Length: 290
Length: 160
Figure 1 (cartoon, helix red, strand yellow):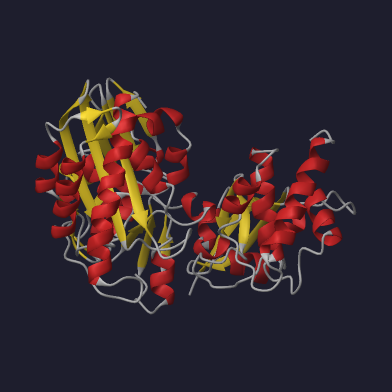
Figure 2: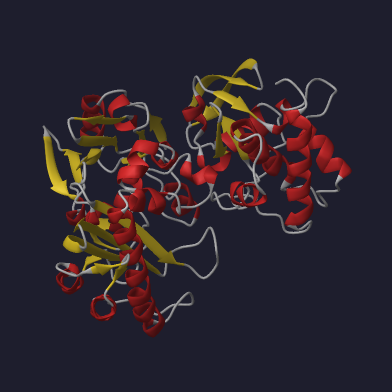
């Protein structure tokens, strides 16, 4: 295995074209365990962390650009980012230990394509876009279109994510992410639920609900969105009948696996419970300008 | 396989060494530089026994490929004492018997140092979260937490 560390996107693109079957990486927090577990090591390993653009976070003209290899801790410690996207920030803050968060990246979490990736539901809920380096240019696609199944993505050979872009949320908007794990830290989600809400006074005017770990890829829940839009918030609480519809819609959207960490029945039920709670948190944040 | 020449700083000293590209930084530290403080527990970033600071940030050195270290500033457990004077964390771990077999201890000390460098007055909860990536299979965590708390108190008394 040969290690190369390009310093520009173009250089990385050329290296990938020259060496079919090479592998890009950022934190290697999934790659190294996979190689250790027997996945064939790539012939050429392309470290993306020496490319400034992939390690830079900027906020200009109402838009964030987040380098795809930026360590999670750069974002979770960024108070402006966390104030605008508390759910996305808390999702990233749940991925492994401090050691892992100093290496792991949004780009890696997305293209590793684990159904349980904790940053992905919130990225989708916030309509984050991925800017992809292609063989001869770039293309920009919604994050929701990247993962196609466990460990599989829509990226072609030689393509890699340069950065993510996301617009500042409209006024009265906030988000929340909750996950269920069988212990309190350092585990993989059996359900993750991201809710983003926009409120105008006491009325929910826009919403997005995305579940993780309950299907081969993250799933958006249109029925849950429909339940939330138009809902009234009384004294900080969303109406209970809306919450019940929301929870039922979340449970119904699940297509989970049955494994030692959680049964199908349990995951379905928890998806409803977490979505309710995430909606309540997001509503509170949206109303309080958090 | 050909080996890459790597130049970096370890515990304040400029060093250079040769390592094949698939060598982990952990193996390079141990086998090329003779710094056997950092340990391999799991080799997959779960246990934290291989923790080191890279450019001031806490990392699992088992997840880092040795060539990534080019130009970086690395601190291992061997570098935290001041000559013969133990770091307050090392001293309080000894006094508080915060270790039994000691395999996890170098990683715990580095993780605790990373915490205290950034947050000199952490709560117990903050300490427990900061050390969540460091697994101990024998001492139990209470003595470790108490020793970090005591070290924080002592560190506040000295100019750093």
